[in-house]
Length: 329
Image 1 (cartoon, rainbow, N blue to C red):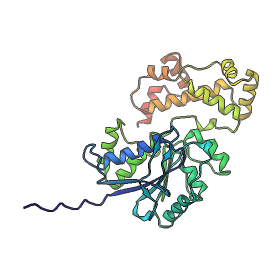
Image 2: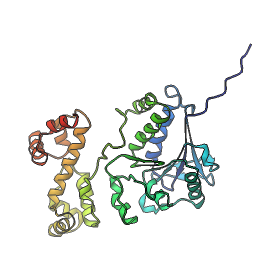
Image 3: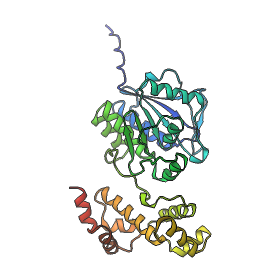
Image 4: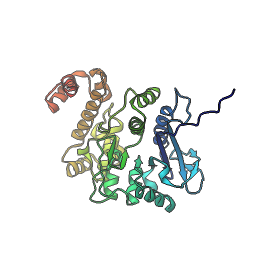
């Protein structure tokens, strides 16, 4: 006798996703793949324990920042059918704002006490919609100054990978989108499911919300356009430091002018700012595990391990190895 199939269990985690025009594909893919892998046995991808849906007001394809398009699956409907509504942003220079129907949907979700998530520049979109007053907000270090320029008087969190503040969650994007998704999976399904997802995606471990973002040290943030451009050039060449004269040449200014701007903006010379950036990256690598000091020195532009040890001790009062052991308790 054939037994009737048992009804599928209700998902423990349901997420509706809104995509901004020119959204970041990496943020979407990392976020959804953790949910997908946590939802079923192995990587069979059946939405059993998790359910995720891409939502839109019109059902038309949405272009990502890399040019690939994604097709939404459902119209907006009632936000209460989800445990979370996530907004994934993208390019800042697109002056992103959502369609009025999407903004109304977010307000309906907030009124119904459905937690809202801003991923990548989704935090900007939630702020523009008036949905972040009184909440702490995480943005990528790269967009720290953009946020302060747009939202005068507000200072975002740019030294953590994501921030959970009551019913608002904001995330710096990129790989941290996966760790945010793992946090949700852990909360609703269990730690084993979160670990499984990250392991299949070749992440060593789940990162807590307060894990520092790799990037520019916050003391180097500035509104000076020339200094901002210079800092980004320095960061892009951390393993092969640029002489100040060469940096000025690439930026199309004299060395004297570049140094004047750095002194006015940061009270540092370009060389001092570059050293702080290289030390910041060295600290980040030291926190990541057992990366050899020689390898860290090469990746951060120091001549050799001895050079890194000497400069690090001058800045921190400890050798890199001693500092790493102290951080581990």
